[in-house]
Length: 159
Image 1 (cartoon, rainbow, N blue to C red):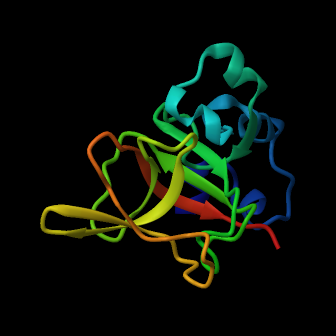
Image 2: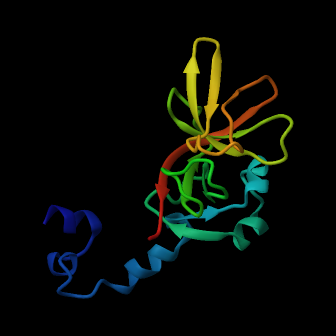
């Protein structure tokens, strides 16, 4: 009963014996219940303008409606096996990474940001790719001029 009351539905609707009201289906499509999936090259421009946001693909999430939250589609294999290419990364742009958090980072001399695990050690932040099998991805130090663009708060993967 408490769950049904919380969601504003009947117990029969909660257990699937009665269809949900149209109002709930419509709310699931509202911008307040969705998060925009933005392109990696637009991270530095977050939050995006109204026109760009209207064009963005969206995902339904309980984290939707928070203006600092955006999503990305993992674009490489640098964080495998935990975050496979194509995984959806939900990022909170208002958070600063703590030790062992996963974050979006833009290196001063690189075109696009990357997704890495942050390892803090005294005066340095080390940025670690999880896929250490590849010669392509190396651990780096967070340097002056580099910038954090948020912390991972949720990841989603389709099978």
